[in-house]
Length: 406
Image 1 (cartoon, rainbow, N blue to C red):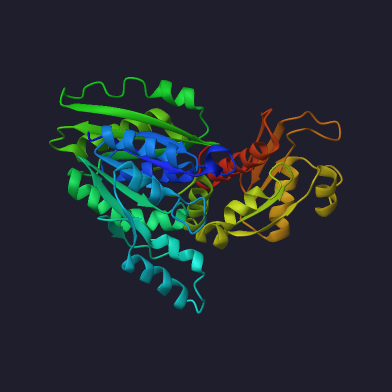
Image 2: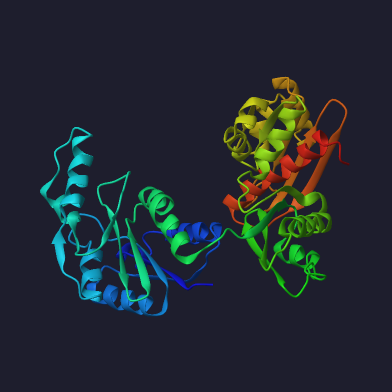
């Protein structure tokens, strides 16, 4: 596997003012085409630090992906650092200057003089088009290493990576997409998932290696099965591994697919409801409107979600539902009747407790004309995660009804 490094530049990254999403995005894109980043590194807007980082990375890698520092301000020094690192001269390149001027002209604006600086690039570099912003990217070769320089604006970086960087990398490094199966689940902790999948690679031939990767995206767990080696008939082998993993993880798995599975648990429940011709309404205290937000984030959710009520405590919720004594089951049934939905769902409780209730105690219920499910859970976690988990736990009961699972 060729060595590829990612270098992100900017004081805002070093000082913690900005989360470095670009490194993660580039790593994910590399994995998608059969390559892998060996190292991430960030440096501030200091020319000497950048020069050292560029020389070090280029001296041990086949490719280096660099983001940031291509803007028009005085602290945008990446092009200058690249030239100094590899003994090149900086010149104002007409093609790059024309791009920046055209960007402003097409938007009916006059280009500030400071933007001319974005055309000052190392002589001999190859320009990478930027369809989203004022700064072109560029690439240059240093010995056996090729370096790609992209803007730090995520939208600009992502398009440039897709259209210019990754195609060139694949041609140069003969990359091929990996064989990947992804399983998404809700209802198990990461350690229990790992325990259930222990030994799943047994029976593979010596030419094949299975790498199991785990990612916790609260409250979901995402598992990737990456099959490496001389595959022969890989799809059948990978399909069998995915089927075994799904069997071991049981009803907690809500989605299975390839390298990318975009759907989340709320969308999966909404799609199931939509397919069954069923609708949903929600009474939310513990989830503070999170369930409604989740339903509104997908087309299926907007079709099936008829509405709901959000209250800061059960007394307010009871007043809205004209109920003196509110339980999760009674609230779920009342909200179902209020909106005329097939299923009503309720989530009661609070992370920090109030009104004499215990902190972190969550009660959820889902009610249809023929079935009622309820559950009490204890999660002493922060408020944001408690609200998100409350919505998921309520939707888990909805899924039990719509899927006819006891």
